[in-house]
Length: 340
Image (cartoon, rainbow, N blue to C red; front, side, top):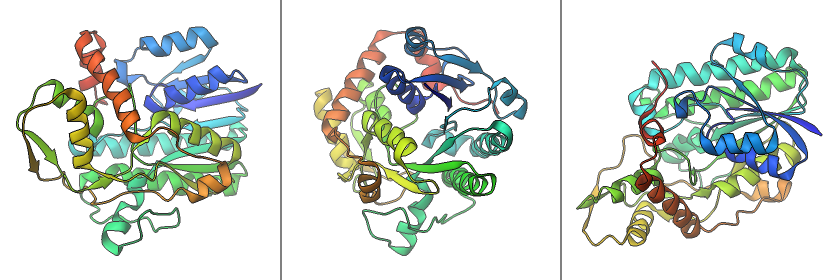
């Protein structure tokens, strides 16, 4: 059986990758995380997964290189999923985004020097090339070979993208020099149940639950292509298992919709009868984003299966049930952030 390490495996995508791999039943899984999403605890869904599949848990602050001493050597597959993400975070604690994400990347790379691992997958983001589309009008849908561009290096909005650029360069170059296999995934607006509240779709769930009226649509004419978590997980595992070393793959969906389309659809699901009004977009937000996934289709056999309306309906059902449950986790799930 393969030995698999998920760095950041308690997060939104990490938990779902762990669940997918565990239910497949052909590997031994270790999750390494600091569990800040649940105030340092293992939440109930993850605990059930751990108990059902004998998953090993390593808890530590991996911004400290000493934490890596807890890990074994010789993992067959290492998924590097650990980072802090979210529009609210980059706007309020940009210095911590830089510190935490850069530390996680550099510490992991240095650990890999002597860890004797097989293949490594680094998870990146479409934010890396958003500036190229805006400034230089590269085509949309956008392929993996577009130049990575930051339009305003001082703007906090781009701190997350800066760290992911560091990670892409770091992992590809360390892999080349040190001789391990490495592929990169660039995610495009992954969403689904249990993703926290620091993202656009959970924000909508909260705002409709709060009965906002008039309901403001920020950046109504901007477009995005949303990728449901089940599809993102399959694309991630396919990249690890079939992706060519040294290559970058866009994992997303090519169904491009406007933010207004999304908001009004969620409003229909909520039975909203109030009015809508347009509002300015968030600073630094790009006008359009949609991935070209031809490379992932060709090399990996990747194909998104969940249409955006179905995925959004599933996600909203989960969030509205969660918001109405009054569970203790809600406060930390919504408000918790990395310590400054």
